[in-house]
Image (cartoon, rainbow, N blue to C red; front, top):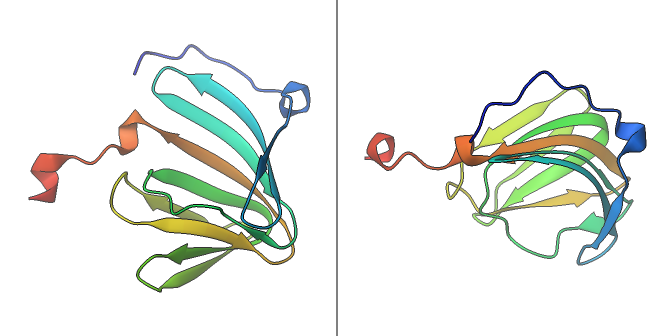
Length: 119
């Protein structure tokens, strides 16, 4: 990861890219730096992710609700104003949104699993 100078982001100027889920659509606005990705992600109503994700994230719910389902069968409801954090390779998770949601998602090299700390 490299140093990032002071920067403001005008999310209105960042184009949206479309990503199909198993059902529903995700719209991403992405700002990429070396080793760091910052996104505003919106899931449509009825969205179910099309894969189990192993990546680490910091996920903050801006609007609506999203369920984070773990491959173990556990699930966690994230509502407006709530955040979850997980490191790479520590869970298989996927997002499900019944009525649509808007999230701020930050991920990158700082979430890589520290092998020494895991032992």
